[in-house]
Image 1: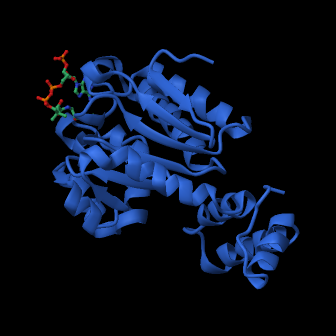
Image 2 (image 1 turned 180 degrees about the horizontal axis):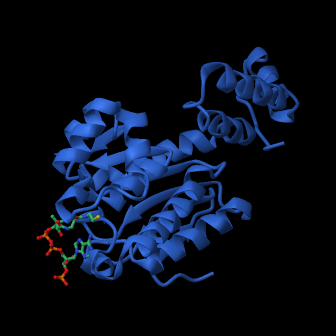
Length: 260
Ligand code: COA
């Protein structure tokens, strides 16, 4: 499958590196990028050669500098609503993928770029990364999920500050508030993302998928979330990998998981 705005490379270990490739526009999200992300993540749901995804931006300056502001002149009330619905649907697809998705943030992650990173499961930032929700500067609010995902990740107070001021923050603050899981020198970004993905892919795949599923309901009422967790725990106990993991531990050997 080919994409007009994405570079996709799947290695032998099943790590797909997906690079948003509009560096002259700092990888801003136009309709083609949104369509390509939708197509890629739809494929990733069923393509067994893809085990995990690292999402990054082309060039050394930007992950994604936001939605493409050139499109904004056309938006009015009804089309703005559709614009937000479409982006949210694609980002929901990313968040709901039962395979790990790591954002490798190599520069600006602004507006829709920050929201794209928020929809990924883990965020690793280069030390030159800059995060922000500058929508208020344009007379709008975030429309691809930041008013909902940012407070869930960093708390309501800091999310409110970032969304109302539009201030940009550097990688060290993003790390301090829990927006970035890890900050590394820019030259080490992709290596760090691959290392973390390698660790995850060395675990039992069904356990990873079920963990992602349980984590998705972490914002539900506690009793409801715990009920989901218990159900998924039961599912995991029915797998061959569970038996293998326990036998390997008790036999003092390394587990060999098959994903069954
Ligand atoms: N949408 C469309 N084009 C964008 C863009 C966006 N979100 N962000 C950057 N670009 C384009 C610029 O228009 C410029 O295009 P040009 O060379 O054809 O003029 C190119 O990318 C390079 O950006 P430039 O502004 O020249 O780089 P800079 O280093 O001076 O500034 C930023 C970088 C990120 C601070 C600045 O581009 C910016 O503020 N972008 C918008 C961020 C934003 O508000 N995002 C949220 C949208 S909801």
